[in-house]
Length: 418
Image (cartoon, rainbow, N blue to C red; front, side):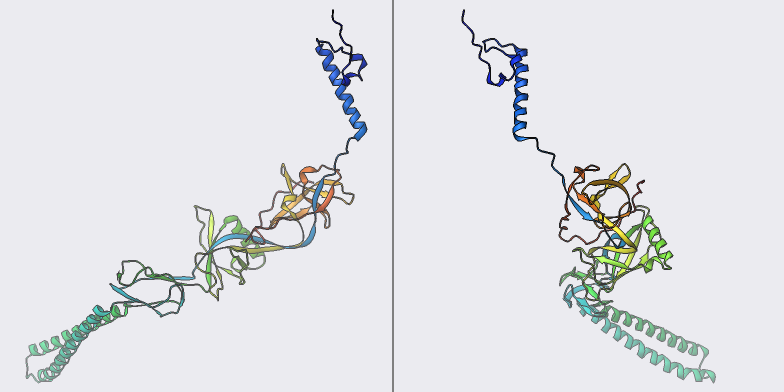
């Protein structure tokens, strides 16, 4: 009978009550318990040697609530158009022989833009002139004849029929001359229509016809001339926004047309001239539920052109001594709005607040916050009430290229209960 060694596994030497001989057969229950005991003793030894590190203090970014006067805006997307857009069309049929302007340039009222081959129309004028000369000669003849017959008829030297014939011939010649004058005037007008001029002062667009094209009044427009100083900007406002603007203007003794407007261009810059409301459509568009509004902005250098887009901004009011915090610092939970405030002892206080309008990337705090208090803007998900934190100044991300400095305000959010 072979003898079995009674050596203990080194990891089990600390558990004398669970000695298991190192034989070919191992008792499963004893082995598991012994291994658990060994692991516990091993970890305990490590704890004694190294020690358990205390929980780390969360690092958060805070921003100080600053009190200042803040304007509250409303904004809409606007599309620019000419104040007057004149579609240039041919009024007679003929071949285009000349273009007298440079596309995209400023043209003056009455400036020649296009020329149609005038030869056919000049011939019509010459023909009408000759016909008129014939009618003038006939009128002169009938006038002289009437002047000779009339005294003779008074002396009964000629019959009444002769007088009537002379009178009828005179009236017929006079009517024919009037018709000839009208035909000559029409021929001259048609000849003048071969010289196509601009009816307004404005920017002339790209020509839609080429030299040699056969033009006709039904063939479409040749180009468009737009008066762009002032330039018109169209935008749509909702019924609620209209009522808000009208109410605010009425309380100030003004009308909605008196509210000054700013134009923010696509590069984020604010246009240097203020605008005003020119036209408020008479009714709401039933398809969109909005009013169409036209505003006018001075454009002395023709910088703005039809087809451009921008944002129309109206200053509704100025909130005195407003407290602003980044929107990311405000947490909404079940209709309540919360802020995490770090006190002088670096402990966190989670408190409800009443919010107002959104101003750009910030949120106006109406109640629940005092000037100078530090609000957590980054790291709110890591804190709990009463927790001690390590506070560092908040560093805002750089705005995207071309982003405007301020965005439109939003309607006031529901107030949280204290």
